[in-house]
Length: 481
Image (cartoon, rainbow, N blue to C red; front, top):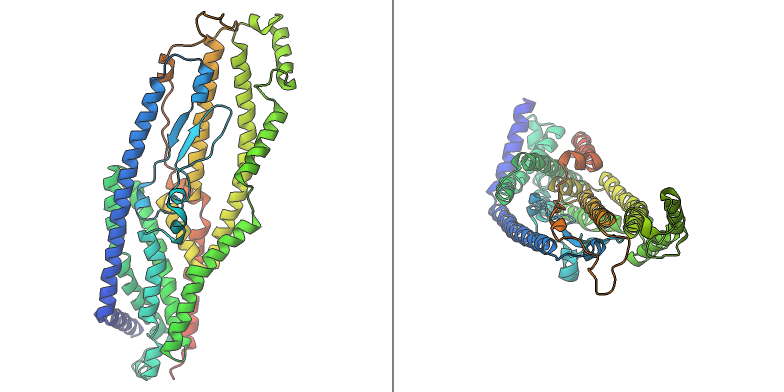
């Protein structure tokens, strides 16, 4: 009897919500906006990727067609590397609009990524990006609140709750049925969107559909739990409110708190609890430590003077000109090794600070379910901070190999004796540039990303448990009058 009554309440709630013309109109409008955002994201993604491929081609051609030069000059000539956005950025742009996409690589210096969307779009991008994820995270919950604020409060006002109980429905059954009916209605905003995202993502890359499908399934589960919480909150506030108008006011306040105030407050708190140094301060401290360890461009540097004396004694020669390899290249290689180690140490300290901010934000998912679904959505879409740090790591590894390769070429192919004025220049054949491979960005696997960022997913499980507990409690304490 309870099961059939529950099913009747679920079906009745869902059908009543779908029968209302304004709800149907709102649903169609939201879906159209989601489809429009997917179309805009798909166009932007394909155009950006086409530009990146063209720029990569130009950078590679310019590198390979450089004339014969000294290897160290080529190391300082540098190389541009690009980050390719994940196909699911069509759905959720995440942090991609705020982080750089291009890094200029050169010897003895580690540059940060530049050319972010936020940097070129000004302050307006801070109000949020037009994406399906933004609509589903922020706008749809507000629609759910407006659709369900009177589900129990109006029943009480119309004195129909007593009728339901006389027909054998308990308070728990009524509350549970209203929640599940509203939840099934909320899925109308979600379920039609993801197949379109899947199609657009597969069309954009023409491969990797299995990984994209797994990521979208995680997104689906995350939003389903999130909407279940919103529906539970809506029905419970409606159940404890004296009137439907008070329920609406309370729910609007809850939406403002969860969607607007808490995320901004959490971000502000993270930045103040774990402050990061400015770019100038970071680079100044880095340069200071490098100069302390050894300056490869200073002929009187103590570290390199000691190294020179050691080499002269080892090879039993009086000057560096008599060494069987290019001494300047050897110095540059050692300098690159030292500066890279110091940079990695400083960068690790900086990343630990950012990681603390990220961990604080992730833990806040146990306070605000909006933060939980936001992090899960970004992680599954490959637009999270962890994916960006992997790009930085790949770029630095490539930069180091490039610089050391040029140093090796100098050591092996450049004479210690400086060329006389008017004589042949100290250069090597241009064919050497073609032998060094191009940079190829590798997407971070979902398994690796999820292993590093599992806390928001655990928070969603926590909110699911909260929903079950609150439903049972509210059902037992439901007031019929």
